Image 1 (cartoon, one colour):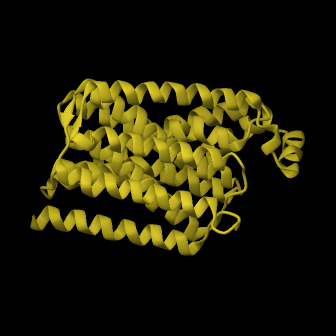
Image 2 (tube, rainbow, N blue to C red):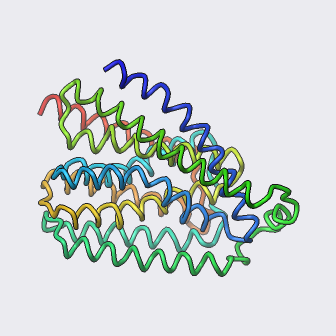
Length: 324
């Protein structure tokens, strides 16, 4: 128990420090290769910081623990939107300035609805899993194609000036990018291990651990990276982080877990957690696209709505675990 508390106290500051270095490296690489920061956010930060989710879910599936595997994947999606973007917007409103957002957000929304439709029969089969992984391969190929195009039309004038004035070598940016990613994954794993030990000490079920403790723990890299991106005025990077991570969780994490261990889905899990994920995804789409021609923006009001929803959702889960 004492070692678990130490792991939490040590892992958190390492996580926050490495997130800043990771975003520095990602932004530098994006500027050097004239690639949109949103694409970098999706391919590197969004997918890279999802490594903890896939590690936890794969090992949970290998052990036959579907509660942790699926709870981790979908719980992380919920935490990414409601907690990560909510807290980030409360600290600094997120401007939605890139036209690419108007493509990525509908794709993310379509993906979560496809996954929910596949699980409507309350079963994650190997066919479902292979379909999700096939969609992931297509998404990855499309994203790389977009990145290779450079999205020059999406780069603002001031961003082009940063490309020309950046004096940091690409090698150093790559070093910080890789070192930051390694430290992000390692520190998040330490945090998750400590949190699991503490949760199990109090006798909380595996499903609730997957939806709350592990989901929040594996979403900490996204939170740290988004906060660091906002501090550096890289709004596209913060949004691309969450969009890419949720796509990765829904397609790759759930897909791999289903191939390793096909499993039935609890009715309460579908109609509570998956439905909440869908509602939050739709809300994010509406807030970012904007209403009545208004420029999309995540203000503090929307951030407060997301955070409030997450607090109520978590309270309900914990309350039902101890009283149900």
